[in-house]
Amino acid sequence: MERGDIILELNSKPMNDANELRNTVSMLQPGETVKLKISRNGSVRDLSVKLGELPASKEEAQNQKEGASKEALEGVSVENLDADTVKELGLPASTKGVVVTDIDPSSPKADSGLRKGDVIQEVNHQPVHNVAEFEQVMHKAGKEEALLLVNRGGTTLFIAA
Image (cartoon, rainbow, N blue to C red; front, side, top):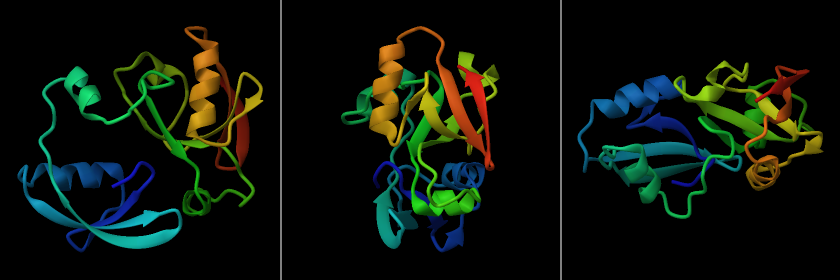
C-alpha cells in the first residue's frame, strides 16, 4: 500500500466509504492476509496485504509510520488530488490542490468548517498542488491560523484553520 491508494474492494466486497472499510477490517484478525483491489494513480491493481495490529497510542502509531511527517494541519489528513478523485468529486479536470481525506473529530480543527472531500487549493494565498507543497506552506505559517481557499463541490470559499 502507498499513500494515496484508494481501496475499492476488500476480499471481493466493494468498499463504499472509510467507515465501511474500518468496520469490515475491525471484524478481521491481526495477522490475517486480505485481498485488496485498489486504485493508484488512475490504474486498478490487486494486492494481498497482511493486517497489523492497531497501536495502543498515537505516539506508537506515529513511530510506526516510516518517514511520516507531523500533520501539517493538526487532526486533518490530506492526500494528493488525482484524476479519479477529481472525477468522483465532480470537479473540472484542471482542479489542483490536496483533498481532505479525514478530520479527527476531537482535534481543534474539527470546528474549522473543513469537510472530508474538500479540496484545499491555496494556503495563505499561495497555491498548493500536492501534499509536499501543502506541508511546506503550512510549516511556514507555523502556529498561526492559516487562510485556506477550499473548493467544495465546485464552489470556492475561504476557511480559517
